[in-house]
Image (tube, rainbow, N blue to C red; front, side, top):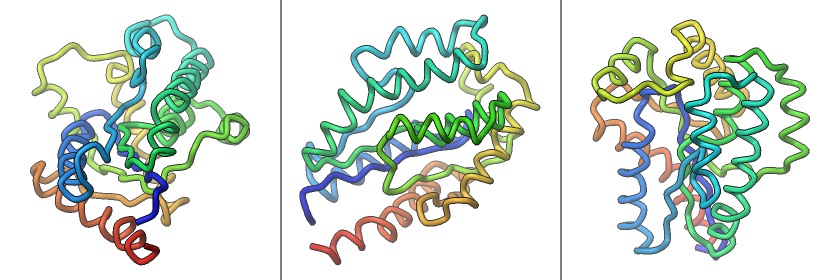
Amino acid sequence: MNDRGIFITLEGIDGCGKSTQAELLCAWLEDTLGKGKVLRTFEPGGWSGGKALRRLLLEEAALTSRTELLLFLADRSGHIDTEISPALQRGRWVVCERYTDSTLAYQSWGRGISFEEMSVLLNWCRFPVPHLTIFLEIDEETAKARLKRRGRTTDRLEAAGDDFMARVACGYKELAERSPDRIVAVNAAPDAEQVAESVREAVEKHLLEKREGQA
């Protein structure tokens, strides 16, 4: 393998199991690549200055759609500059829960902000493009039941309503159709280990095998 890092993102609606799969994927990657080779992170708030932004985004009820979008982008900018890009430059693998596809699904399909205008803004930001995105696909009712079983306070986005989440789910599906070379849909309804096996298969097929062939 060469010394350039690999960037993997995990996407899907709330309740699809991103955190569980990120933990399992990172444990497997460390067993495969070696300790210290993998950075697990998340959005919003996965960097030293992100705690206040995460609190605003998930708890502040008075945000307008435009303010919400710009806060997400500000958080991502700091996250990339301080965590993601340095790790990739050191040749590490980065596994991130949520990234640009979340912004598009939630703020364009969910909030109704123009996809074309958002694309212009994202292109201007020049955020790194993931090498692979795992879309954890699940129906809204199953995801909703999982959230209920968690027994924790619902955040601002989770509380946006069933219609909102249905639009977000449609957004993710369309994004996956638009970028089949990067986004791999994985059925997230089975138990965690079954889903993890499908995620590992996707990583092996799309990343590990390619890198070994280039070594």
